[in-house]
Image (tube, rainbow, N blue to C red; front, side, top):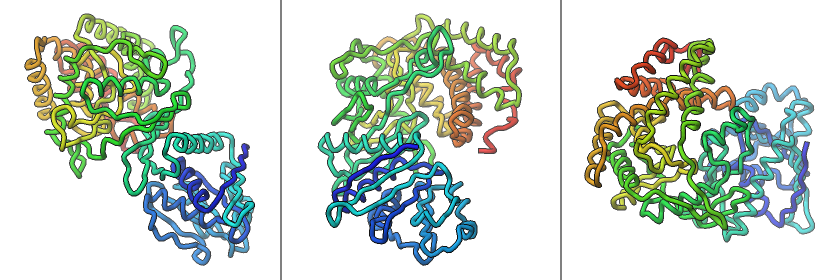
Amino acid sequence: MGERLLHLADQRATERLAEDIAVMLRNGDVLALSGELGAGKSTFARALIRAVADDPDLDVPSPTFTLVQSYELRLTIAHFDLYRITDPDELAELGFDEAVATGVVLVEWPERAGNMLPERAIHLTIAEGETADARTVHIRAPDQTIARIDRTLAARAFLDASGFKGVQRRFLLGDASSRAYERLVADGASPFILMNAPAQPDGPIIRDGKPYSRIAHLAEDVRPFVAMAKWLKSKGFSAPDIRADDLEQGFLIVENLGSEGLLDPSGAPIEERYTAAVEALAQLHVTPVPGALPVGSETYHLPAYDLGAMQIEVELLVDWYLAHERGTPPSATEREDYITLWRQAVASLEGSEAHVVLRDYHSPNLIWRGDRERVDRLGIIDFQDAMLGPTAYDVASIVQDARVTIEQPMADRLVAAYVAARHGLGPFDEPAFRRALALMQAQRGSKILGIFVRLKQRDGKPGYLRHLPRMRSYVAEALRHPDLAELRSWYETAGVFGSGAGDDRQA
């Protein structure tokens, strides 16, 4: 267990601590709030619930008489006040165990819960400080949770030191990686976003003395993001301006490019916006390739999207997806044949057109700015894993969007729009591009099938499984290209497109 002692100058500081805790909350967190009457437990709980709701006027009544008050917000929150209970067994009647299992729980007077609190509970003891409004808060929690609390407090210190003292923090999103994002709100406006991306330690060595992240050339800190953001902006593309950074800790304050995306209110793709996205790629692909990119006092060079990176990515299908789909892992022969076929396929890309590959160029990472013109209409917000590789890769990303279905007729029109734009910008080898596109669609789709299963099985994020049917369909379509006939035969024989022994219907 770890402990921290915080000194808060006034009620606003108490409310600000509640906001800092709110952005780091996860389902399963239990906050046990102890202290004398009037110490500030209800003040803390009310501020935390309003922060999660992103509603400063939300009515948050004390549950003193109802014993429990529930809120269906970004997270389901159950607020318990145990002052009036006489026996811990009463918690079962109040649905305490279910609340712990399905959301976040706040408990005032937790000492009356006996041994009903889980060991992972976060204990906050609030006491009066040296002045009437001052408070001290003693926090006790498991070491991993204390690390999360330290991280959110470090983010607050970074904001204070960067000219954003006292700004409200509101959870925006977390993605499939360790990154998280928050809106920074002042005077009702939110022109900036906090990017919280701690440096990632190397994983286990898996090949040639390197971990997966090094072989696949994944960004391990924020420096590649900073370098690419500045380069994209210098070339006229709409990447976020960076207002402040702490490269060592992995904190960035970046411009909020907006909240409107490429989808309509029902979640369907808006073709005009996707067309603008492929035309922006065409413009990118005739922009001179960057060399050394300045970042802080250093320089950054884009890595090559090489055979090793492509190969380790497609192996995710046999390492994670295949056993999930059919219930049995691949045999040694199946795996060897698969790797050989992909090695031959990737080798055929040698000499193909190469440029910046942004890597995650699809709807969640693109912002629509309809009041702008040309490439400035499209905000690009995710590029820290950029490399130099086949120009077809990002076209594959957008026309086979992993999170929204792009029907084949629309995909064909988008590819035609890209091709027309490239022909209009200078010499362009269309047949070579179309061969590379089919290969990159199959490669990317195979990788994503493995990643989505890994997110569920290794990282406890089952929501991504709902995208598996879409990705299977995309891969099957890509493998119709005649140059990929041998790969298609392997996929069909191995049961990649089977009905699914444990598939997404359980997500």
